[in-house]
Structure formats: structure tokens, C-alpha cells
Image (tube, rainbow, N blue to C red):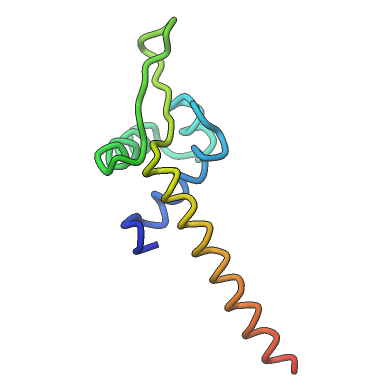
Amino acid sequence: MEKVDITPAQGVYLDYLAKHPDSHLSQLTEALNYKAANVSGMVSILEAKGMVRKMTEHNDARALLLALTEEGQNAVVEINKYRNMRVEKISEKLNERHT
């Protein structure tokens, strides 16, 4: 995941937000089962990298919605390519052992 300059942990956040667009910060915190302060800090890092956008909900300014930016979406594509490549390599090695 070096190609997109993110850590594996950041990839988890991006992956969740790709599958659950416009999630509340509280939903992300609950889904990942992390402490709110840790999630908030990581989201701020991803926002600084231009991968996540924070928005306030129209009817509740305290509620924070999260969405991937185009750069964040591109990072998820690269993450998935990397994962697929790793699975292929593992499969190839397993097949070599069984032949």
C-alpha cells in the first residue's frame, strides 16, 4: 500500500467508508470498535491527506458525516489491486507446493 502512501490501518478506514458512504463518525467508531478519540484522530489524518471529507449533517450540526474524496476512492482502488495481487501470489505458491 506504499503506492498510495497509507498504512494498513488507514486502509481499513478507507475500505469501510467506501462500503458505507456518508457514514457518521459514530458509526465508523462503532463498526471498527475503536475508541472515539483514536477514530477521530485517524480521520483527521486522512482528511489532511485529502482522502476523506468531513461534513456536518444539515439538521444536526454536531453530527459529523464522512465521505471519501476522489483521491480516497482512488486509494481504495489501489488497495483492492494490491490485495488481489497478494492473493494471486499466495495462490501461486500454494499451487506450486501441490504440484
